[in-house]
Length: 79
Image 1 (cartoon, rainbow, N blue to C red):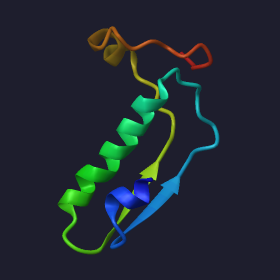
Image 2: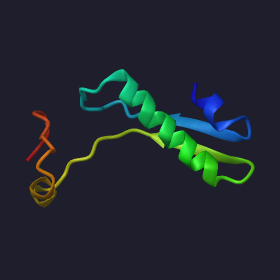
Image 3: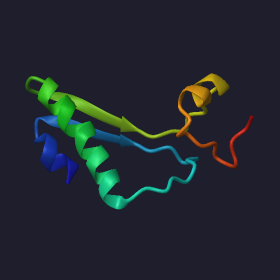
Image 4: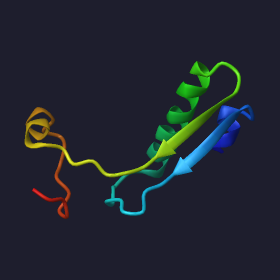
């Protein structure tokens, strides 16, 4: 699906991490995010190019948690 969105002149590389924390998310939201990650760079690339999507984990510091109260700490995350 993503390859069709970006076209044949742009190479798509998928680099998933193997140690991801679980995330509760609706499938259509995941598809929407991935589509946006492909469409926006596609429009910025003139001609041929490469798009790489990587996954990983990110731990926010205490200050970020104070600024973004909607963030919740994963139970397995360190302090």
